[in-house]
Length: 314
Ligand code: T6T
Image (cartoon, rainbow, N blue to C red):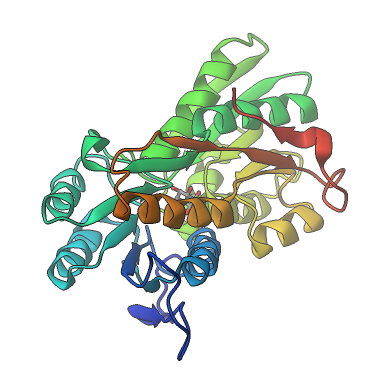
């Protein structure tokens, strides 16, 4: 659940493990602040962070807000600053609201690495590591086009404006639709990262425009809700393209409620985040931003290598 009701508010993982001696140059602490608790994307990222932290000898403390909401994330950042970790890996929940809190973290001497999302002016950060989100949005449109070559109306379900990744995906999708006169864009609706809201938005949109042929659900919870909305509306012929490929998304693909997934690389983002923090702590305070790849997954390549389906960002 995106509210993560069953999850503890904080989890601490001793990545170095009991008695082991920290690797040379490591031995410090890294705070990881997720966009939201209980999100398989950030859980997978945490696995990458823990794995690399163990290799490099860091201890990791993971926390996340119960909702994808800057008013809940800001106090977590403030308490992280008070606890003075060596580095902070963070997925900011809003480009504007999280700017000052994260700047303050950097000003206090913490090496800040932005993972997944970013803020308006990330110049205080060591680096930002994120998917090619514009490319992912464009690829989602290509997937709809492949499934619905005759064209028609298309809808986007996002979470909230101001989330850098989601805004980029929507932009990439919108630009691609605008170039194809066979398709008509009926707009973007915001679900506040809540699957039930996404389901209601999709049902209402299908009532208004029963001839919608495709929906781009721009993150995990948007996809979960969109699939439900389509089922409730009995509109089984609508193509749904989801972003992210957690276990539930793969199940939805197999069940046929979602036709394609844009899979990011959250584990790798976590690994690279720790490597960037480590390099910053060893003196490389400014590093190039890193753009990670994504893969379009359909039933055709789900079981295979997916070789030709890997989109390399240019
Ligand atoms: O899609 C990911 C992430 O990239 C985005 O910034 C927020 O939503 C997810 O965490 C999926 O729920």
